Image 1 (spheres, rainbow, N blue to C red):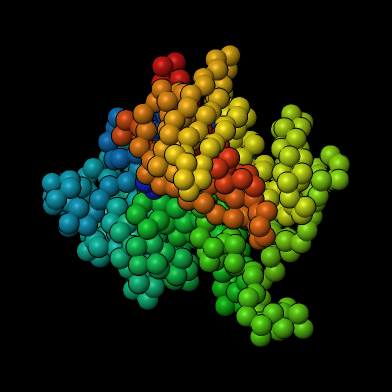
Image 2 (cartoon, protein in one colour):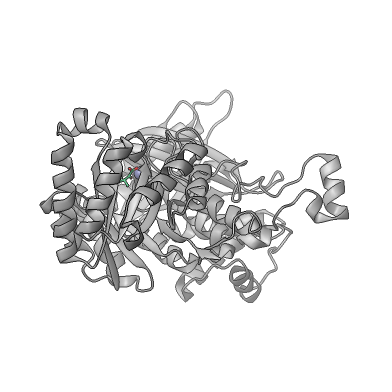
Length: 506
Ligand code: KIV
Ligand code: ZN
């Protein structure tokens, strides 16, 4: 079978999703997981855009050894130099340079003539090749570029030394048949096309990101640029898990292999969701809560008689279990850590200890602890221990005749803050009290609550997005008590901000 390289751009294009900003440690945590998942390339960031982006690329290059690490840059020397510098420690570094080629982008954005753009692209690739053995070039907005010009520029950048040429559907405009024809035409018309790997990068504005990527693969593209959970600019990018599982399940129709270990897909998706605080839609393919749930009586009956009647893949293939009762309050540390192992979660001894303590608290309140609860507990507890801001306790008075009043105590290293506040409701009172305690003014942009497992004692997962000084920070928290989960989520978002503030002052 032909091999398709998986180029993961969760940490670059994905991170450009509104509200998905990650700090350097969080990016590293995701990169470790991507390595485990088996991606071929990690695009670690866009170094010229901020010092944090540069640091993220540098740290990932230093520590992730088994995967190519790419850094994005515009086609100008200053950007290319910075990209090269940020990934110089990587085992296999790649500079990814881009320049718009569509009439609309050249006229309105770049204000440059096609010949100038052509020269700039060639110069950029030559310059980058002197700094790095692997250079990828992307003609931005390729799907709205005139075909003659696109073929001319692709040929020229390959001649200048590009080892990968990526055709982006930047605005998610194309449709599968058209994109197939475009990739085929490039392969026919560009004489030196065999000297570079052909890649595609599809956005999801019309919900066609994965379909377009598959069409391009069928036409000869051999690298797919994707993101976990399909996060990315606007409606996002083609989703890694959907593409990989389509190739995996439909090998008969799509005879292409990837190096992805599909049993890590669910874990990776949950990890990202926890870190950026984006809940996963219940009906999201592959990783959504309902993706393997059968509700209708006829379906349940069919599945019980013979699974394949309504299941085209097993939950185990993507790293999910059958979600049966797993643990309870009498489960010992050994049983707990064995369950983590089965779920593919690896923790240090210290992390194991902290998450086990929290597991016992939850198991005390809840008779049955499901796999999803375990994921939520681990995510929440790890997030908390990465941070110095900790919610020590909260107390709330509320009711339909009382004015909701909250008291909180928060510690930041050696310092303790305690404050009380009233609010429009109990959650508002808690958030105001926390804000007063830490002395940081925020705007709450999003608040979501989701039950992780069924039943009255379900673990609730709360995610929030807050805005501070024009930047957005996200946080998640889990508990059987929704108010506690809310308080934890708020503190974790604030902790993201304080970590960034500390990093900047350093
Ligand atoms: O969507 C796009 O065109 C991009 C390029 C930088 C590859 O993200
Ligand atoms: Zn993109």
